[in-house]
Length: 196
Image (cartoon, rainbow, N blue to C red; front, side, top):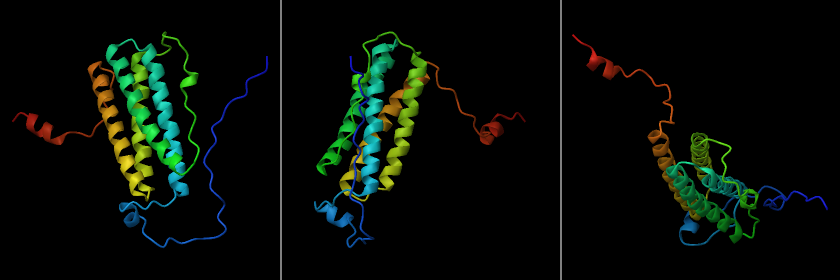
């Protein structure tokens, strides 16, 4: 039997510039009335990376939903599949409008196992870490985007990530899985509790 070769996604490319070109319009004004310029290299790389990362979050959540023991953890993972799936599709849609390749989906690599190699606590920790990371990348990508439709899309996916983060946080607190970070001294509370 022939050995199966690994499959890799094509990554978007743009023609090599022949020299420096300078912008003649602000972009924002023309985009508000519906005239879209092509994606620039920064927007393309951020959209592709965020699509790939968010697609991975979707697939990981799907895999975790199969093996989670706690019902609320399972429900969270399934909700995250929907949210991350919508977000990855929104990035892909923008890339496809400029006839650029989109990342391959990871779902084919999920087995049919229902036996968890991880605890629900560890799976929720990973979910929380990925949501937090997504928020950081979306914020950085938003700052590098100059097209109104992309900015509005990042606003939408940022809200989805915040929603997933809130659900995640509630489950971690409910089960006593969220360790409190070290904090500064609360001087006001100390002053009020001091007996005179």
